[in-house]
Image 1: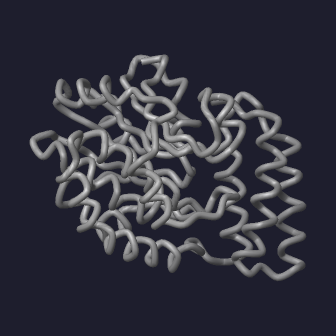
Image 2 (image 1 turned 135 degrees about the horizontal axis):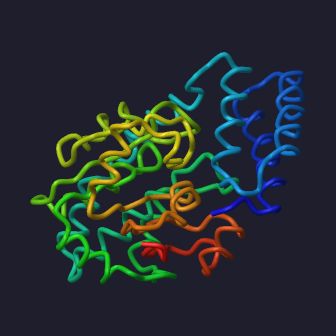
Image 3 (image 1 turned 90 degrees about the horizontal axis):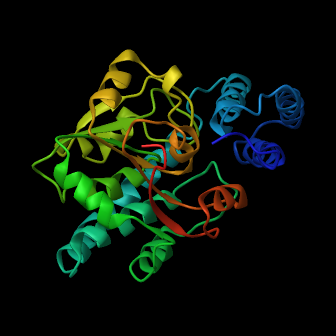
Length: 284
């Protein structure tokens, strides 16, 4: 997805909010905002939003002198999500449509996102997910594709959300599934450390994408990751960042699972803010 003009004020608003949330000193907040404004003025609109977001978070890490400012937040939500795991497994087990329930819960986990401007309650989101209708519902096609696929690449998004992905992955224990995470910390996105903390290594082969972008910018990714991507029969991509960076990739069967958190994505995906999306890519 190409950058929209509406993305620029959103990125600036996020910068102001995050710099305050992360405790930057007033002078550092001004310095960061000045650099982000300069960056925004020179950005190419042929690129995706995560291209500019990657540069913004590099600036934040540099000013903070901290490569992982959300580390404690990620640890908190890894532990919180794991506490929900037994009850969520029971919900899926007792459902008449186990697959669809697991998909909905996986999307519910996408609410754990500190890169958006939305406040959230994980417990309320889980309850809502159990009765919520999907705004875009390609679950039938996703299930058929999963059954037919030999090798699956599942792209994670946020720390803690990985627990919800695990529940969906566990519905297909016979499949060869790779679980992809960010190569280094960015916002509260999951890295290998987070995936291991949530037990994803027990259900999938873990792989780092080698990039610090809040999405999957293929030209930034490692050779190993791109090889797995190319060789996979099916890619399941969680979160808006993966949608923004992969929805125009051709020649690959990709399904996007995410919660819509902003008007730009809502317009691009054709569904309301707050909607749950299971969408097969148009370019596959």
